[in-house]
Length: 223
Image 1 (cartoon, rainbow, N blue to C red):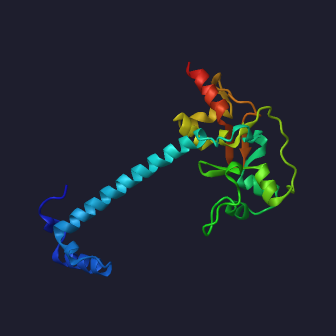
Image 2: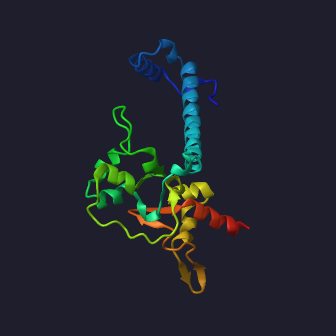
Image 3: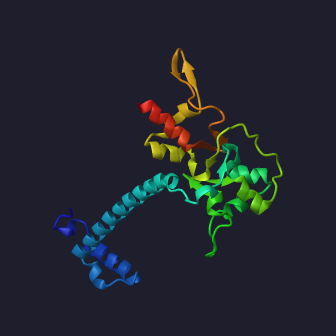
């Protein structure tokens, strides 16, 4: 709360300087009064804090809903092995393209929609996951050999998630999820890896997991 004696904060010179700035911003001269300026300043500060909190909450809700909201197309939902889903960096390397070229195909530019279809890419945390079908449709066959398929289960693209999205869904810190993909045993203490090598994939710097497997694992452990 701003004290009533505004002279403690604004002198005559400062007030004149404030009026000069506001006049250049094409604002009314009444904004230059001491009390009105302080009220506007406090309102702007509260608005920024509120907007930031709402933005963070909206991003969390969007991350949770992104794996829940599936495109309902009946039996036409395409399913993939985990080896057939990759990040932009891995896809660019396999197809012999530069990363910016592939990345620009995942975003809308100049009002035009992305070149990838909705069922060919997914935003997961700070990464964009792509399918081999979308890459083949746009860029043909890959230059390098594709990863060998060792997994046995197929999932829809919306079921795959990065480590960041998994941590948001489970409400856990990403550091505490290391037991999913790594083991650490020292002097009889530590943890062992919970997932097999075929149940997760490292694509560049991103770790890709099938959400149904992770959710079922933590649901069984919570009982």
